[in-house]
Image 1 (cartoon, rainbow, N blue to C red):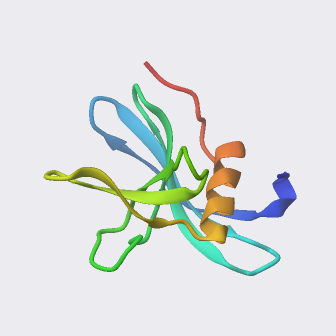
Image 2 (image 1 turned 180 degrees about the horizontal axis):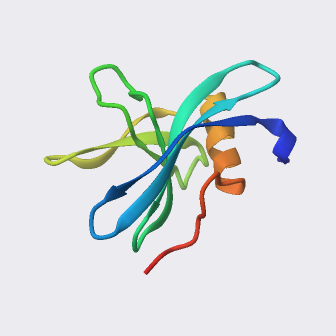
Image 3 (image 1 turned 60 degrees about the vertical axis):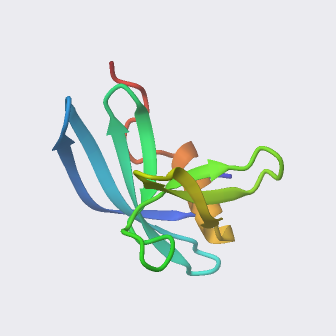
Length: 117
């Protein structure tokens, strides 16, 4: 994967405050080959590090967001969702575009990706 594989447009920059100030960037990722696109929030969370979350619901009835996870047996990528009673659970397999966009944002983060402590 190289820089030219996707187009990333910064839509918004900001920060939220919890234990510390956590900067974020909302980006639109476009695949130049397929013209598919998606919005993602890339954050640097204090004492955790870099996180990438979709800015859209990953399934009907859910709030926007989700956490990418990889199945250890199959190697496939999934979106997970959190509920207080259930904890984190797999919602659905990521599409080919979502997987490519996620991996691209991991390799070429639009915000600093180191852990702040």
